Length: 500
Image (cartoon, rainbow, N blue to C red; front, side, top):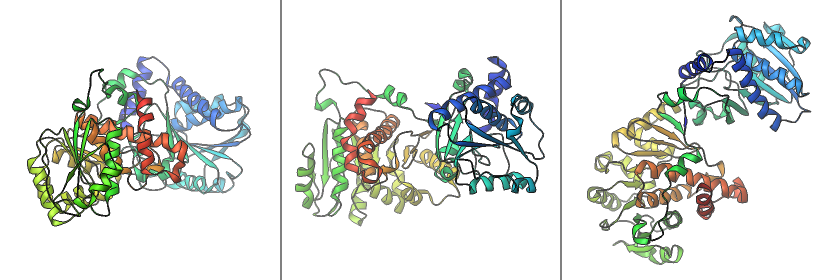
């Protein structure tokens, strides 16, 4: 999995690479520019006019390398250098001297020169004004430049980091709004938080050969999951396996009018490889579950319309509870009894999470290593509001430690926190999955994996990534607009096949 480092650690990584490869800093800058241009030439047609806005630091030096290399590939390139109070970095000056066609370079040193600078005839605008070294709010001339860049209709690409964005703390002030960010070597924490999408856009990591051993030994609690990480966790099937040793799960889900949640979770659980499933439903819903999920056995509640009777958990490897169960007082009491009786980690979702939020004393009854899968609204009920997404992440870490369990906060780049403070961000999935029932599918999948003997954290990691990967396969056929939760279930088999 990819480590996510702080700005300070990234600067130390650059310095260590320069010292120990060894490589000069200007040659490392050349390598970064080549990596950017290699990507750029595969994605942007040579007929496009490219504008590059450079500061006078090392990010601006990257921009000058990019300009020189794009000229060799016959792109029409325009360069603007924004002068401020900061002096030129040594590598910036070296790369400015390497540009033979100096007439392409324009200077912006004051508001008058900015007003006469025309970015509007550029089809693509590349931001190389500030990099990860910026630790302050952008003001003055640089702020005015960013505002003018943002006002253009050009397709906007940021070099490493959108100018003005802080990568490991909340940002303030004016920030470049990139359509795409091409970042070097490692993902940045800010890229994974919803509030920064308007600045980062879509993004991709390109490797530039920074020191692997330094990265391996760097201490961090933030990670981005990759396909290979999940593949390494997957358990093989034995030739003589049977349904009894592929996990037994109990799913408590559904109520009158909300049986869709139970059906989706049950079907997803079976598709994820579960050996035996019992779904506990209100008595009026028995026919529905047996017709819609025939692979599941049924346990019938004492109430006609909702969950009131706690079924036995003996000989059960994992229990999932919450999708569609409602918030009735009798349901709360039955849920409380389930918590009191349970000795193994539970998978808790949807209405069960709201019951925990409404009755905080129930949190004390959660078995250790239980897995909670809230969406942001449900998480807000649990922990209260947050000032920004960095604050939300800290609340998630603290809450995970508080309950001694796993918290899966759903959304783009779903974050998974464990009690030791580590955070794992998901890299699979797409906006088409923002549809009713998608979370119920995830609950069934994680419960299934937990019952099959995966450790709780591994069950959450594999479940979240596999869920997203199935959604990515489904969207190729269904498209983002038409994707529904059942499609995700249908594509669990090919997603498994891809991972294996």
